[in-house]
Length: 76
Image (cartoon, rainbow, N blue to C red):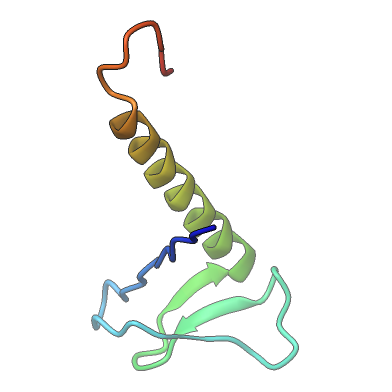
C-alpha cells in the first residue's frame, strides 16, 4: 500500500513568515498569530477547517484528472 503526503503551506500576508504561534494548551477557539510579526489569523479551528477544505479540493481535482476521458464515468 502506498501513501501520499499532502502539505498545506501557510504564509503570513503581512510579512511572509510561514509559521504560526499558538498558546500552550490551545483549543480550536484559541487565536493563531504570526510567529514573526504577531498578526492575528483568527481561531485555530477556522485555520484547520480551511486547510481541510483545500486538501479536499486538491484531492477531488486529482481524482477528476485521473479519470478524465473514461467513457461512461461522470464525475461531478
